[in-house]
Structure formats: C-alpha cells, structure tokens
Length: 493
Image (cartoon, rainbow, N blue to C red; front, side):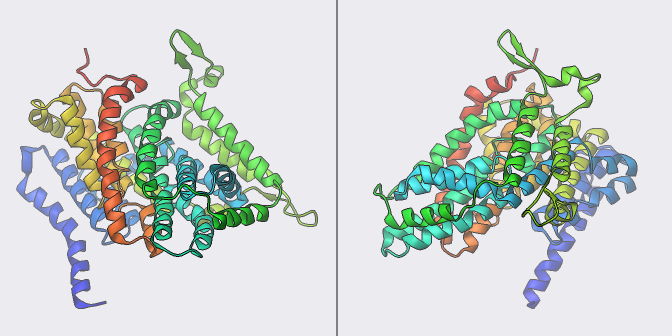
C-alpha cells in the first residue's frame, strides 16, 4: 500500500469520530442532550457507512456502543433492534432465495423467458431486461445479476463471432440490461432490496400494499430502460444467439423433485404474504387468513418468511436413488450463504431510527426542516427530495442511504402536514436509483467488472436513466402512487 493510500485510509477512519466530537462541542440547533448525542452518533455512523474505512457491517455495530454510553437508549432496547420482525422477514426471504438458486429454478425460469422473447438483438436485450427485473423482485439485485451473467455471457460469446460496432453495442446493452433490470426489479416488492424493508420501521405498509403501488412504477421504469438500451440495436434474428440459447435449454435436465418442492414453497409464501390481511376492493372485502387466528395482529410478514425457511429445512429430497435424502437447504449452507453483514446493517439502521424517535431528534429536525419547505409546492418538494436521495445513492449503498435519510424524512412529514408513507416511499424508491457509477449498486459493479462496458457508457446511460427515474417517480407518486397506497400528500384533517 502506498503512503498516499495509507494516509487516505487514516483520514476516512478518523473522519467519523472527529465529526462526532465536533457535533458534541459545537452543539448545533441548541438541542437537548439526548437529541444532540443521537445526532453526533448518527453523523459518525453515516460517515463510516459512506466512506467505508471499515466494512459497513462493523459500522452498524456502533449504535450498540455509542447510544447506551450517551444515555440515549439502553443496551437491551438497542439489542432488540437487531432482530425484530423486519429482520425475520429479510432472513426468511434470503433463505428462500438461496433455495431457489440451489435447485436451479432461477436458471430454468430465465431460459424459458429468453426462449420466448426471440433472438434479434432488440428482443434479446429486452428478454434479459425482463428476466432480471422479474427475478430481482424476489432475490437480491446482485445475486440476480450474478446468476444471469453466465447465460448472458454464453449468448454474447456466440454473437461476438460476428464483428463490428453493432455487435459491441449489443453486448454492452445486454450487460447493462442485467444491471438496470436487477435494480429496477428490486423496487417491486418489500423483499426486493433491503432498503424497502426499512420503511416498515417508521410506518405500516403491507406486502400487498407495496406491490400494488410499486409494480406499475417498475413497469414504467422498465419501459424507460428498454427504450434507452435497445436504441440502435438490430431487429433481425441472430443465428448465433439462437444456437446459444438452444444449447443452454437442451442442457437443462427434467424438473427435479427439489425444483417442484421449492417452487411450491415459493408460491405458498407469496400467497400467504399477499392474503395475510383482508383486501378491500371498493365495498368488497376479500378474505384475510389471519382473521382465523386468536390474535391476528401477532402474525406479521416475518412470521410467514420464517415459516417458509422452516419448510425448506424440513422438506427432504434425494439427489439420486442410491443417496440419502437431504433437506432442500441445510443449515450449513444457510450459514455460508446468508448475508449476515446486511442483516447487521439493517439492524443498525433500525437502531438509529429508533434513537431518533426516542431522543426527540426526529421532532427537532422535522420542525427545523419544515420551516424551510413550507414555501415550496408539493410537487417541487417531491422533485427536490427524490433528486437529493438519488444523488446520495450514487456514492452510498441504497440501504445505507435509506438508513441515514428515513429518520430525517419521517420527522419532516408531520411538520409538513403530510402522511409519513406519502413522503417515505418516494425516498426509499429513489434510494435505488443508482445507475451511473460502478460503486452505486452491486449490479453495476458486477457488470463493470466484466470489462466489457466502458465507464463512459455506464455514466452516459446511467445518468439518463437516473434523470428519467427522478421525473418518473415524482410524477407517478403524485398522480397515481398515493391513490394506490391510500394516502394523501395534502395536509391531514
């Protein structure tokens, strides 16, 4: 390591504690001690999340040390933030996603869609974009990109047998379709990306309620990304791509018992998530299965996710007649595959958010910010908020961005006379709009690491999609999204 790199590493490390001490000494905003200490601790955590002098999971443990030492919250209260229903939901979702990957169900689904999409350059690009979007609704964005990359590489390998600029553009468009589709699809469900689940720490939103509001937006962003990526691609069928997909398809074995059982658990889980609470359609109220239980409010989406995980550990299959049966996923496999660091990051964000509320910092910041925003129109507030969050998500992960900003905007909503969900959902969605830089998202990093997408191409197309995303999210939420969520942007009565 060079001397300059070592010095930069030290500066990143000391920036957090230095800012922490500066806030305590300068005492900005004339805050009471608990709120002041919470602000100082949050600045330290936020700087380390953004600058990453240590892994983000390590930074996420800081609230467990700082907040009890400052008298903000007890160790027992903070520890409960690191495993609550939201983290149970995410844990169960990860176990289910790993089971889908382990049995190869994701690859079968991807090939089925691509075979039906067609093999012209435009159709191939749209096919990969569609597959990445659909799969990433249910498993992590980065995992989606990684699992589709070998299929895309096989198709690209055949196309590269032809030469010329047009083929290079097709190669770049297909790879960007993986990255952009995975990021867009992550917005579609509560478990699509960790940032989505963080909203549940501030306001109640059901799995079905999120999907109803978010999926039309996903469809709009899909169309924008499709128009951007297919521009200039050929409409003629590619014989090389036909051969590559046919070979991949022929190599797929018949459906296994593991695939059938995993698919059954997945469909059951989605059904239980979407029908947990009664669904009101006009004056008609559809069945909600928790009404059969003694205390329906005790059962949450995390309960369903853990049930799915338990089924995957219990249901057994044989890889061959001569072998012993095994569970669909073993605990040892789960230990190796589960992103424990993400779960800690998630817990750290919840701990900070709880401290904002209990220390009174939320109320203080909300009152201060609302005084500066009262003169702005609601639509302008939406644009400014989404633009700011999008810019931040280019240099910090969407989970870290949401963890830092959600407590602030949750405090801002009451002072503006706006329902919390109406302000927080655009913030969470905008946190996923990181399309420009390799460091912005895992999918961007995976695609850029192939060395087949130049940085200038990622910057140019990513910037166009970022700008379009800001406009689309703001207009969609203002015109349609709030109605689907059942909330109002205007002041409550």
